[in-house]
Length: 424
Image (tube, rainbow, N blue to C red; front, side):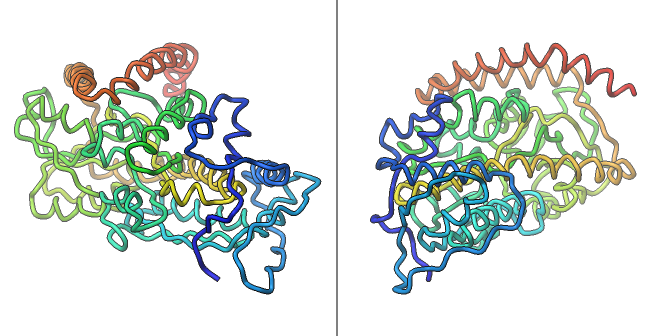
């Protein structure tokens, strides 16, 4: 049986109450997550969280009610061990939702991240909560996922928040801010620095959605070019595929931003619509054909606009509120698992595919004066946007303080160690 979760399902901020100890329950306090949490619901949610990361084969689900009704049981659960998790959640409703994504199926990393998330949700619910990831263009265009989820065209989305800075510049914080946070730092801000809470308060009010990190790329490459970039003057007239607020930085320095979904970049290269392009790094760039520019190829680093990039799983907030607390816990758990797994996948594949690229492209670092210009103009853009948008300004100040503090910390032992590691 397939149906959406009904309003009669047991609602409640299961995970929000669990996370109160870490200070991350604002959504529950503000009423974005409805209802209370009974002892059975808390036990089920706790068991789900205990099972997070457990790859053992799930036990067989409990038998469904004979009448076929999608019901959520609150049967007594006296233990909360990981082995009980699927047995508890298998008594919840049968749900099947569609997930719009921004990724072509060829992207084994990002579309694979959406698939991994959906599989974990199914595993942790004994197959009773099914999410079907669809590639870009099947439900929504690669840059239209958030509006489709917001408007009810799909129950779930998997996308990058900064694709939607045209709706609000606040969207940039959900993915990566130029000259901002590395992946570890981004995760620290999201999970323990209040980032998820801050963003979801905004998403709820602005879009009627709720999101969780569900994929990470690490620091990205700076892109592919057919000429050597020796100074800021070389940016004049350069048409480059580059996302978010980084495009405004490029344009202020003489270039031209072109916004494209990943699956559209190759065609733009072939038609001459762009002179340079970036996506993620070696693996994804080769899959998408970013190496197909004609002539000499220069592959630059670093991707200063994406030092640590997060992608999100997004839900229509009304549907989220109707989910049982056990299923909400499952989603949080599966998203966190996908976040870690995606980063690990990139770190395995990119080092391999870098060796291929070294055989035909010249790998270069952006010159120091260009990096200084990029950084100075980034801060100007951030200040300008904050002056025009109160929501952005409200986040930017505390975010900058977090960035500066963690940069100082990571600039001690880790920087000195990495400088030695590269000499081994």
